[in-house]
Amino acid sequence: MRRQLKAVIFDFDGVLADTEPTHMRMIQHVLAEEGLHLGGDDYFRRYIGLTDHACFSAVYQAHGRSVSSEHLEALVARKSRCMLRAFKTDSMIPEAVKQFVLDAAERYRLAIASCALREEIEFCLDQAGLLDVFEHVTAAQDVVRGKPFPDPYVHCLAALMRRQMIATDDCIAIEDTPKGIQAAKAAGLVCLGVATTVAPDALALADLVAPSLDRIDLGLVAERLMGRAGRVAEAVVQGPARGVPSSTEWEMDRLDSEAQCRNSWQVI
Image (cartoon, rainbow, N blue to C red):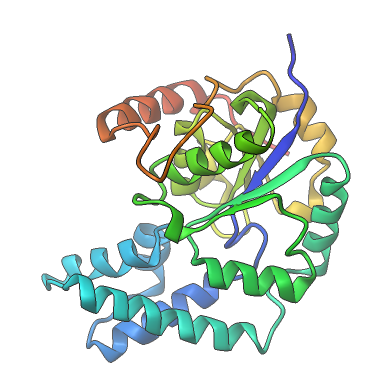
């Protein structure tokens, strides 16, 4: 029996907000102050979609340098201050995306599962007048492991379930990076990819791919996707570690998702 769409879970950077280029520039700026170079191609190929902590840690490792947890926190804080200064000069959420969200909110429950910092998400949402539109926001601070692990989506689903029971196959995730799509699929969600950050063929694990949110008929997407979702998520997750698959379980789920989706994705 085909399910009815009840909730839409958005990634933030690159889906709702045009912030991916700003993230890259600010990470590059902070790294340059540390004497480390990060090229744009390398960032988009290897690091996009990671939390700030994971990104800085991976870049240091790639350069053969260690970084203490205290210094890592300082790097993330410096980068976040740069981001918030940049946000004050430009609106990060395009008007067409804002309208898409407002239209969707009339029909579905809305939430965000992101690896961005909470203060950055809330600043942009407030700036666009959307802060109260989303029922829940999962941010980087809420989980131990970021994408491509499913933790952000498991945490977000659990928060929605605490308010009103919902199954994974009542939901659609919207993502713009391969790591984000892997996280959504590992959490048992169908996923719509939007090619705002990388080329459409890089989003092949998604069930459908669209150019951007403002070119999507969400009702049509729901009609085409509902019924593809996998298992029902756990109803209660106490904290970021409970109810989240282990690394081995996640890897098996990821491989299953790849096998099922590699030949089934479509561009709309």
